[in-house]
Image (cartoon, rainbow, N blue to C red; front, side):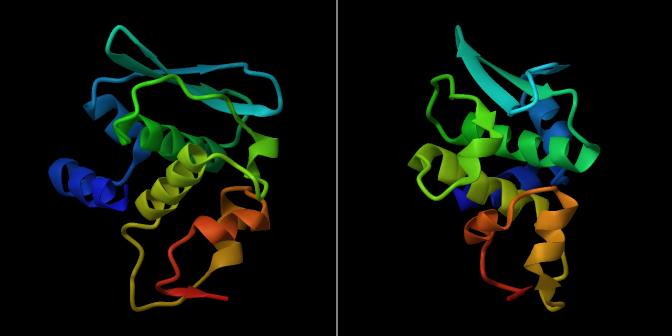
Length: 143
């Protein structure tokens, strides 16, 4: 799925997941989903709708939007289970792992590839657990 990131950024000239969701004519809503549910992607009648928890910080919402966008462009047109805080562990479905990889590639797209980046700073910025580092591409990331 990483090639989808290149296609989207090239076509729409942005790596902002919120803008990309809108450009792709997906529904986008913010609502209270509880404190453990971060986001949902629903597919009904050929339409995609992304719902993001309204209790998240802006950086968290950006990550969740990127993750849910990964589901939208994956080609799998079935509603996904809720992205929950406890879905960041080691045993997650391939569909969720792919969406996480997509999200990191999208959000890190415009970073200077020649300047090393501390992976934990990125994870801290998006308020993600350090176990999520396994979904980041190794290039330009300092361990």
